[in-house]
Length: 168
Image (cartoon, rainbow, N blue to C red; front, side):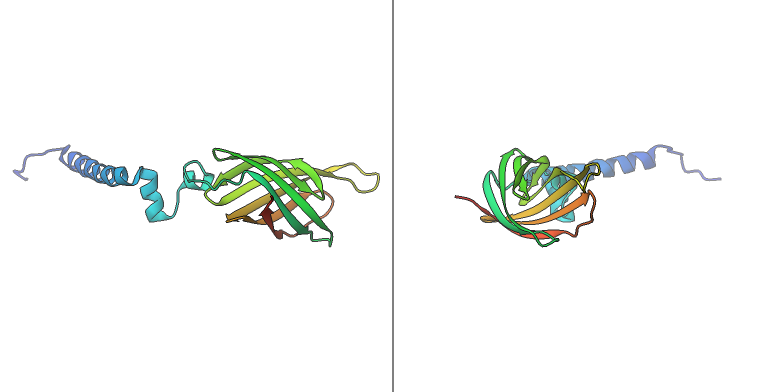
């Protein structure tokens, strides 16, 4: 039998002190960077907040943008994007086949943006089907490089890539 006195909470106390020390050290470093999220982003390449655009500084895309879009079925249209940025929320219109559609679920994070528009597709006398158009873009100067994926409707589509340029 051991003559060593039992200290049942010694191990817990040691781990607690170690945890407090780590938190204090991280807090001191994070204070210099602005927040713990900044520290996380610096070492691990971005957390959930940066992905969702809640804390990342954003590029202002407010204004009118134009693009020549070649669709996967061969049609080409000059499309117009009228965007308004408020915080990280993106609103406005985006034309599809020359017709303006409301921007839904618009988000901006850093130089990346995303939004959805919807249209109805009709085939013959059949019922209309909703088509969802998901736009993902990256801003670089006076250009936005977009990828557009349309799903739903009567036909399948491959992603379409195009460049929108800021209007006058």
